[in-house]
Image (tube, rainbow, N blue to C red; front, side, top):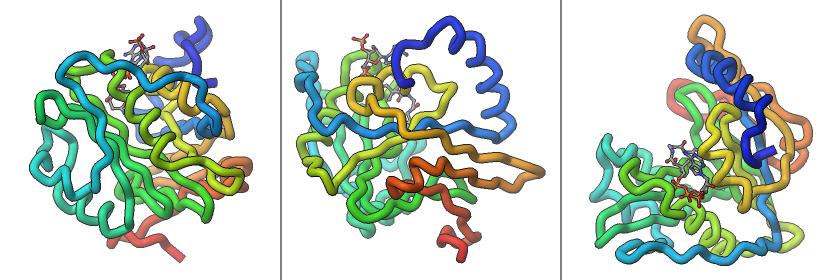
Length: 214
Ligand SMILES: CC(C)(COP(=O)(O)OP(=O)(O)OC[C@H]1O[C@@H](n2cnc3c(N)ncnc32)[C@H](O)[C@@H]1OP(=O)(O)O)[C@@H](O)C(=O)NCCC(=O)NCCS
């Protein structure tokens, strides 16, 4: 499901993009390969991939980097981990992993069950894309969070985001199901895939304070 886009996929991509612009988002939930066979990629000179705590990225909490202080402090408080890419010491990419919760929008979050790790918020600076930085983050995560039978790693990609689907193809090749966020008159409603929910990944409603609604 997360492989190279077919002709059919290229045809429905514009439809998915229009839906996404209207606030309705189709999420493809994928499970990581527990025995990844692809080697850690050789990064071009000057680039690194390093495990970090979210608060280590505070110097780069800017809109250019898509990060802010509140997000980084809350992620650290939850015990989330992060893999970051640097180019001569400057932050050029990151991805986070949580064992409990991550926010998707103002109104929707992802709740993660026991035994599950959830990869979220992957980003590579536009000037540094297609250098296998996302690939390196995925491989490093697989090393840092070994997957035993009771420990799975999941992630989702938005159906219209082909760059993200292609980078996910080697690290998260097992398709688990689709979730949907439907937006009606400014309110968002989560629709969960039964198979993803069985695994422990569930979209949930948040209240104004960002807490999961009862
Ligand atoms: C998606 C994203 C993280 C990819 O990061 P990246 O560091 O450029 O990805 P990589 O270099 O590791 O890509 C690995 C492979 O994925 C495929 N791929 C990645 N981006 C692609 C693109 N735009 N078009 C076609 N193939 C692409 C290629 O096969 C690539 O290998 P190759 O360059 O040897 O052909 C980056 O485009 C990004 O930050 N996008 C905006 C934020 C986003 O959408 N995040 C995903 C949230 S789930």
